[in-house]
Image (cartoon, rainbow, N blue to C red; front, top):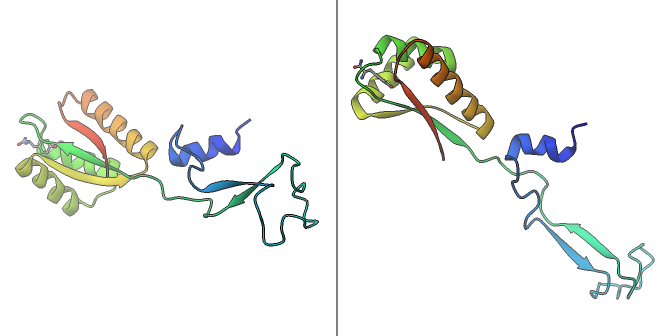
Length: 143
Ligand code: TYC
């Protein structure tokens, strides 16, 4: 069964700190406005229980990753345009612009994605290039 943590991992990356710095634990012994004597179910002083207080929203923006194409002397320009259209949904004009940018500057950005999406694009492009015997290199880097 998939847990809430499993589902969050899809967005934040496994082992990302889930709530680091976003919650604090207030001891039931810590003085409160009403002296901690209130009948609000905190267990009262000395009970050894703690109250967890949310201080920030539960959601955070995921880290984003650039997917980059690297230039080489052997992959054809036509093939790179096909890659950009097929895996990055670029128009013919935009794909041609990015391909020429990579051709002239050595590296160019295909798009920015969450970790898992970027990783999938890189794998798909590398596999597609390998299948067509092109040495094209596709990498990702944290923004
Ligand atoms: N430099 C290649 C050529 O002249 C074209 C090319 C462009 C290759 C972009 C890779 O990512 C690349 N045939």
